[in-house]
Amino acid sequence: MAVAGAPRRQAKFAPISGKRGRAVAHTAVLHQIARLQSLPLVDAFGRSIDYLRISITDRCNLRCVYCMPADDPAPSSWAPLLSYRQLVTVVRAAATLGFTHFRITGGEPLSRPGVADFVREIAGIPGVEDISLSTNGVALGQLVPPASGGATGEDSGTGVTLAAKLAQAGLRRVNISLDSLRPDRFRAITRLGRLEDVWQGIEAALAAGLHPVKLNMVVLRGLNDDEVADMARLTVTRPLDVRFIELMPFGPNYKEEPRRFVSGAEVKRRLREAGLDLAPELDAPGAPAAAGAGPARYYRIPGARGRIGFITAMSEHFCGGCNRLRLSAAGKLYPCLGDIGAVDLRPALERGDDVAAIADLFRQAVAAKPERHHLQEYQQRDFSWREMFRVGG
Ligand code: SAM
Ligand code: SF4
Image (cartoon, rainbow, N blue to C red):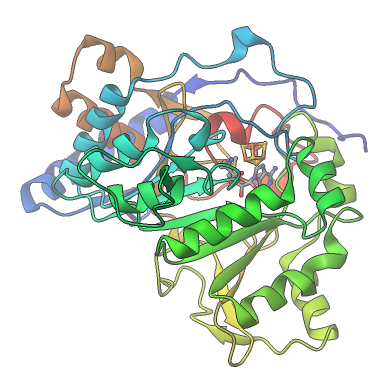
């Protein structure tokens, strides 16, 4: 579909300046007050910001059709990754500012060696209360050597599952992408994945005691939308949350969005048509969910063990309750998924482990958070520059 009046492609990264720069200066005063009172950072719209999503890599072992191009991106486009040491400095800085929740994501975070050690290290930082992970699940069930000092979990004699090792290191919960329950379709959507690997990963996550285990399905018309009821029924017998995510118009395939997009309201209607009763749980926009504040609105099939969530970034944005920043694999701190402005942490990190300097850059990023995204205007504005696997989904 042609994109009417789409502006010329924007640069992939823009420093924050101009009107937003003045907002930075204005809210710096508020931050000084917050710092003196040891309060969480508050942005210009009154939102407390205490959640950091950290992309530890932009590489991935899958090539989901809505996220990555079919062919490998040019090697020169991969981010020079921040070292774990630099990432630990970032977490320390964020923790001094009242950030309590840290999600590790990517790309595929488990494709980078050393994640369990990283989790263990940041779990010991004062102020870090909650560590979660977003993964495609492929590696969660793989056996790995236990951590030195002995491991709990399913010790098979040769090792423990990666899920158990992560749980032992301090990971509390996990989101796993699962776009189809049919092996052939799963393969077609991920281009490279095997459904059985992901199921093994889901079982390993449950066995490791990670809670909640949330399954994320991006609903795609003509590709998997006829499976929404089957996905929802998983919550009846298994302690799994299933979340339906609206497709966002990102990356090289964003022009396909109108053809593939299915709204959360349509999914809800289709679940009800399939005879599934949905009772709302904490249905107010921005309300904290039982386990982790977040963008999903939750429901439950009466008597079901897990919940059903809807993430409606496109049809019904939830920016009023946004509490997060995103750190890209390249070291840029993004105030908003739908906005190009970012604060580059890399130069300061390359100068050393200066927690105070990084904390100041966090304040700039919080001050620059826009009130809301404008992704629904994708037919007038080009969002193809935003690639989830680079910025961290
Ligand atoms: N590789 C991990 C995974 O697949 O869960 C973590 C990174 S992935 C970028 C994080 C989340 O972003 C996944 O749930 C994925 O489905 C979602 N995602 C990627 N591209 C998207 C798009 N265009 N619209 C909506 N969700 C998207
Ligand atoms: Fe990889 Fe996750 Fe993107 Fe799929 S959604 S290509 S698994 S980063």
